[in-house]
Amino acid sequence: MLFVVDTELFNDQYRVATARLRGYDYGQNGAYFVTICTQNRVRYFGEMEVPAQDWNRACLRPTPLANMAAACWQQIPVRFPFVVLDAFVVMPDHLHGLLLIDKPTETTPSLYYENRFAPQHDNLAAVLRGYKAGVTSQARQAGLAFQWQARFHDRVVRNDQELEKIRHYILNNPSRWQHEQFGEEGLFR
Image (cartoon, rainbow, N blue to C red; front, side, top):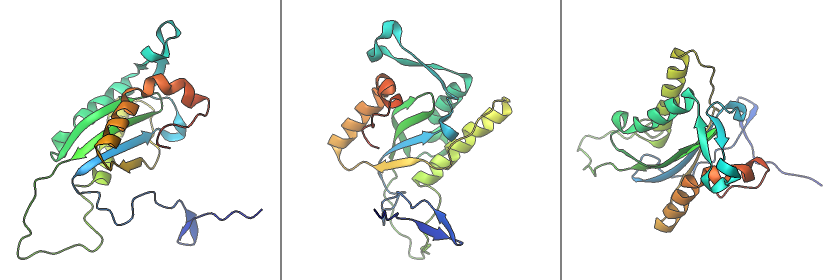
């Protein structure tokens, strides 16, 4: 049987094709569901605690690094005032969050230069790049071993029903931990 793999070449080397929505401006107003994993899924952020084996009450027993990651997340709107934070959870080896980009509408000035490659600031990638750099910097200052996975997963939220479904998924992610560990697929994989 022949399998065809959708890959792209850069400098004659294979690379993973982008998962981004083609033609979509990730700096425009909207809701974005993001997942960021640690390198090799190392459990830098702690372990799950399950009171009386009741997974509905499961929660993370956070490490100092998890507390740093959560604190840095809360600081995102300070650096990027156009971002509104929504649901968020830190898990042992990843985190999920909903970010809402809410920029005021602006009129285009008469002298306007449009970058044909699109601006690389004030968009989702810039926000997450800054967030990951902030956590990494604090970890190094504290002498803690830590590494993020190179990429992140995002999903443009399409409507209010999907937004509610994602909020529910994020907030209930700790109770799903045992299922994810045994290979059951998550909601948005």
